[in-house]
Length: 123
Image 1 (spheres, one colour):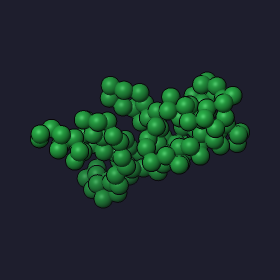
Image 2 (cartoon, helix red, strand yellow):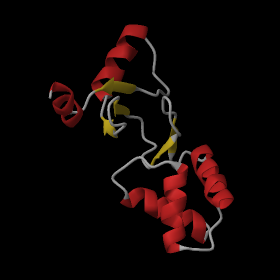
Image 3 (tube, one colour):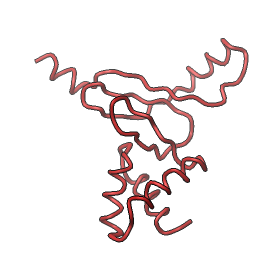
């Protein structure tokens, strides 16, 4: 593992957010000013292919990257764009029971309004 790849992975693990490639690049530049944008993008792609991280396609915005490659769902606030993890083990088991076979992979994003956006909308 290169120093650049280690840095990218460490930055992702330290962040409570699902960052975009540009956000990861900006943080990486703070730690390693010589790192190139192409290096970050190339490493993100390699890490995704190796299933070390997951790329999340976002509606109307740049993709984000998830430090957790284990299967799980996401809550996406349509108001502020906040994205957070949500466990869906029971739901996957119900789907497997319904279809009679194993679910091998999935991407689940539930759209909602977070409490803060609901509060703002009510005002």
